[in-house]
Length: 203
Image (cartoon, rainbow, N blue to C red; front, side, top):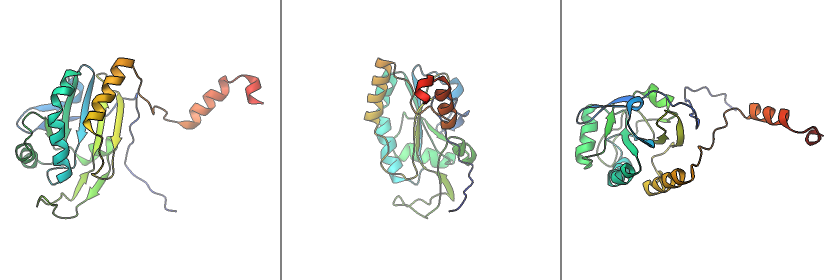
């Protein structure tokens, strides 16, 4: 068995997410720290202009923007693309309202726990894949900068449906449902539970 080392960093619910600031196609800047969302910020990391699956996915996101806005959720889609590629995606994919962030560094992608792939040449869109680019990730971040939910993928397929995300947001807000998957250190939790257990439970 090989011992693998990696700069891939997992993010945990209830913990602070990394700082995030990118330029936006069409002008402006997205900065997570100053985002005015009242409930969540939905950050969708996509593969880039070359990806036909991303095209369909972001078109669906564009169609759901009003529903997210009604729930106080701010939305942004981000890639490592250049300005030219980001503007091309925004125009050619018909995304007039969706904020498209570009210029994410691969180091920042790793800080967000994203997988990175190497180029396989041109896609069905006739566009060359970058030499290196991140695979998809979706994150719901609370206004205090802590992670509520994440979905990180190693392939472009089978991404979370936005209708499902909206339904989850409704349930969470209605029931004050907490972030799950918050355990960072299993041994620490086990030790804590053992130390507080009644003596007869330990025998």
